[in-house]
Amino acid sequence: MEAAIILVFVMGYLAITLEHSIKIDKLIPALVMMAICWALIALGIESFPQWFDSANHKLLEGFGNFASDEKMHLMEETLLHHLGKTSEILVFLLGAMTIVEIIDYFDGFSTIKDFIKTKKKSKILWIFAILAFILSAIIDNLTATIVLISILQKIIKDRDVRIWFAGLIIIAANAGGAWSPIGDVTTTMLWIGKKVTTGHLIGYLLLPSFLCMAVPTLIASFLPAFKGDIDVEENVEKKKSRFSGKMLYLGLGAIVFVPVFKMVTHLPPYVGMMLSLGVVAIFAEIYSSSKFSMTDFDYEESDLNAHHSPVHLSLSKIELPSILFFLGILMAVAALESLGILFNFATSLQDSMPQMGTEIHEGGVSDLVVLLLGIGSAVIDNVPLVAASLGMFSEPMDHELWHFIAFSAGTGGSMLIIGSAAGVVAMGMEKIDFFWYIKKISWLALIGFLVGSVAFMFTRTLF
Image 1 (cartoon, rainbow, N blue to C red):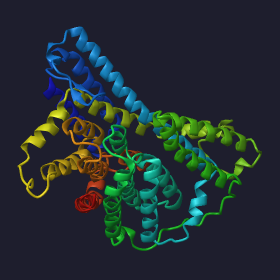
Image 2 (image 1 turned 45 degrees about the vertical axis):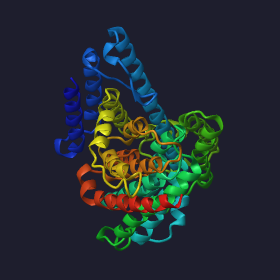
Image 3 (image 1 turned 60 degrees about the vertical axis):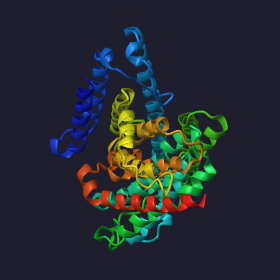
Image 4 (image 1 turned 180 degrees about the horizontal axis):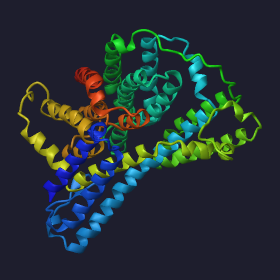
């Protein structure tokens, strides 16, 4: 039965990567794959010899001897656990996307557009890469990608040009998220799991993460795609809403408030995001009732009274297919994790590594494993791989291994577009082709990953 579940996952994964060839939207195989995997688990629950306890990150002992009712109850609890964890991400994502759309409703991103005076593509690339690197550390790589691609859509109208910038934003956002405890879900897991502290995480990973962003951006700035100037459409300038600046700063401030709320209350980030959304929505409703002219805004989606509520309009513009795709992918990976398949794979990988480098450095054996974990996180979601590593290794808090895992899992996902949350969102927002990304962006991400890894091997000697 395990072989059948792995086969379904592989087939579903192939269908997602071949989306443009088979003309089926990626969310369909993701949802089908998720449903079939869990159905096979339910049907074959009696035959499975092991079960992975996701809450405690370890295999349950004696699962094969459990009674049928106990196994079914455990499966239902595990499914609910994963649905809860996935829903936290999805609700957080919904809140962030809605705030971004509300800012856009008031033309708030035109304020940032006004700051970007240059038309030179290479300069714009550096501006967005640095913004992505800094923002992702503050508001997490997922939200930073949403915000920056939304701004990018206002500046660059040609999609063929824009997707190049989006590819580099993914690399920069993932690099920026790796050195902050709230920048990426995997670093947050290690931080909450008391494996890393904020000071050491920044000390170990700031330089490697910066190089992981800067080197691919430097190489890309010499590519033909970033030569010359962007084409600016000579349209009649729209009258800007007098609330555009206020809503931009309010919206971004509300998103930045989320990690502060989490640190103070210790509640999951989505709770803070819902509070932020509520506050932004209150001001949006007040400002939209202030009798400024809505005729200046060209919204084809607005019909009848839809434009009277910026919140309703913003919710109607959210990319729900991306949300459902995310649900399917995360829950399908959760199925593999629950059976202990990922855990066993990671453990066997560690055991099969040649015992080399131990004389030079005590972490030498694990270095290759962690590098492969980073590459693996591009293929399979990095969350369960980091969850498996929490059960694999027993090193103390702030051991260099945990920081290397944080870097590797956080930045390795950039090598494939579906290897990170930032990539999945960018894929949904810009309809980026899986194979286009492999041909044009993956090699840049690989260079950044390797350069950052070498830099980490240097910075770890300083602590």
